[in-house]
Image (tube, rainbow, N blue to C red; front, side, top):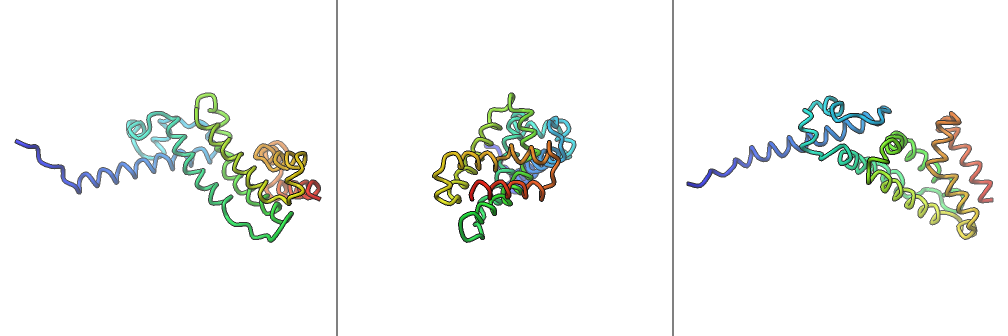
Length: 195
């Protein structure tokens, strides 16, 4: 005798509950890292998401796969910032506008970069995600620079370094500048290089 077919409503409810649990786990991880908890344990993530530890590992093989999923969400946030069309009409003004965009993007990723640094020796993908972002940001910079500046290798390299996350992080953390102060420093230095 054949087994009865599963009730589609029950199966659909389980699937929705599973998707909800997965989203809550990822959201909990993101909240914790944003709050500067660099290396939350699976137990702490489960408690924050209000799910059991087994549920975390039912959805994620290990913490690295949870970091990977978190990275997808953060990358979408960053793309929404850096892919917006620039409003400035031409030349240096467009590069200055990029600084504001990068400031928002870098402030968004700062806690996740700190977590990535703490785990880069244990995670295969954290470094590759950041390398991809660096490549994309450089391509945007090259596209927006006035041609004489983009064609000058020394100026291009100086601007790529100046407008990097590492420079931003130093201004914010080690030099204790506010977001507005850090942007003003980068804008001033960029204008000096482009001039």
